[in-house]
Image (cartoon, rainbow, N blue to C red):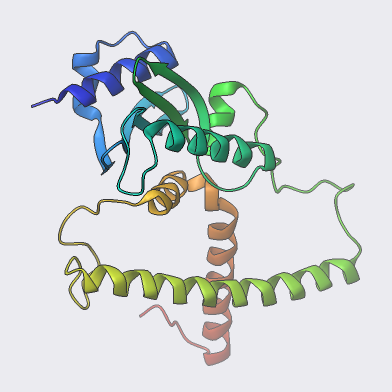
Length: 234
C-alpha cells in the first residue's frame, strides 16, 4: 500500500524531472531510507537515457522540531547548503538537482555526480586514455607509479579497517551474524551511509580504482604463475 508521503515525493520528482508519469504509478518505487520526526530521506531508481539512475529525495516538515530543538526548516537550510557546497568544491557525495517548498513541507532531489553531469549536459570527466602530449618522461612516470602505489596501499589498509569497524557496529546491533556477507534486514541508513551508498551505486564513482585493482591483481597472478612455472588458476 502506498502512503501519502510516497505520493508527495513521487509528485515532486515528476515535476522536478519533467516526467510524464502519474504519482500513483511512481510512488511504489519510493524506498524509505530514513524517517525522523521532521525529516527523512528516500531513494528511487529510474530508467533514463543514460541507463538506470539512482536518486535521493530529502523531505522535511518545516515547522516541526526534533528532539534537539532543530526545526525542519533548520535541517532543510543546512542540508541545502551542504549539497551546494559539495557541488562547488566537487567533493564526493550527492549532487542537488532541484529543491522546492510546499506549504509547511520542503523537498530536495539529488543524484550521483555522474548522473548529475549527464542530466545537466555537463561534459564527462576526462578519460584516462593518454595522447602523445600527455605522456610524461620515463623517470616521472616511474615516480608517479611508486608514490601512487604507496598511497593506495596506505588508503586501502585504512579503508579496510573502517569497513571492519562499520561491520562490527552492524553486527553489534544484531543485523549481521559473524561470517555473514549480508544483513539480516535492510539497513535504515543514517545520512553519511546514505551518501556513501549513493556514491557506490554509481560504478563510475570508483571506476578508476576498480581498473587499477584489476590490473594489479591480474599482473600479480600472472607473475606468480610465471615464477612457479605452472598454472595457478587450478
